[in-house]
Amino acid sequence: MTRRPGIDEAFVHPALFYRTEEEYTAQTVSFVREGLASDEPVAVAVPGRNLDLIRAGLGADADAVSFLDMAEAGRNPGRIISQVLRKFADSHPRRRVRIIGEPIWADRSAMEYPACAQHEALINPAFENRAATILCPYDEARLDADILADARLTHPTVISRGREQDSDAYDWRAAVARFNEPLSPAPTAAEFAFAAPKHSAARRFAVGQARQLGLVGQRLLDVELAVAELTTNSVMHGGGSGTLAVWAEAGQFRCEVRDRGRLADPLAGRRPPEAGQIGGRGLLLVHNVADLVRVHTGDDGTTVRIHFDR
Image 1 (spheres, rainbow, N blue to C red):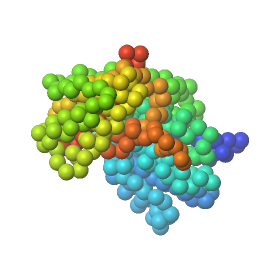
Image 2 (image 1 turned 90 degrees about the horizontal axis):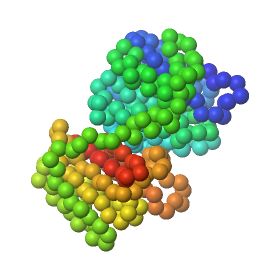
Image 3 (image 1 turned 90 degrees about the vertical axis):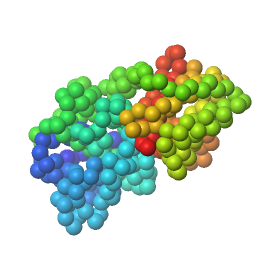
Image 4 (image 1 turned 45 degrees about the vertical axis):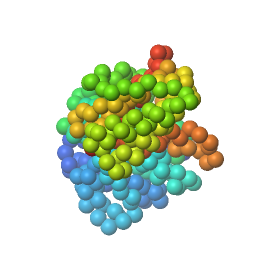
């Protein structure tokens, strides 16, 4: 894929629809080699099996590429922008970068998908006016038609059968709004109401519940940090109080914090802090320690639900 005249310094974000391993390998390897030939730093962040296909297809050229297993680095879709895409781009501040990022694959759960779709939409404002090309592959043979339709909503261009075309459905804001959906009701949960200045009691409550439900070691520390950040945000920005709920479901420890605030910035928690920035890191830390973060915000308040594998 070549950059179009006049936008060499603009952000380029195509979706690649593929059907076979051979097509996938041919298209991604060509994309990588085109970047290397242009002296662009290149990163590949795709799930394990596809990582192996690209590495093998590149042969000796693989030594010039940074590789990440997206199944690990992107376990929580909410940290991909900060910890994968921006981390690589920001490490090459004066050069155009080229990245393959595949956050959606057939084994992703329905629970994770809305966060994945929002991630794909939010790449666009996160990289606006950045000299970067991010190619996002989609398995046309295994993914549902609705997911492929969403790819056209979140990507300004689509590559299919070797042809690149503008997407007439592209509207990243609409995608963000559509997946800002009310969260499914939690099963029976233990709840704790908190308010300033004693909201630290909510953190102790969450850790105690997590321990009873089987979390140990680093996972307990992750819960403690995440709940501390969320309840502090509620006190500072969500009306001074909130409700914490915790439960076990589907082999995970889950908790959510509800308050009366509204989260106005859809990139909150997804972009890395600017140099010298004071504050504004709470939700970013939550994304970094949790296995999944789901958010619903509206005029009546905000709910942040976090998932931890046990």
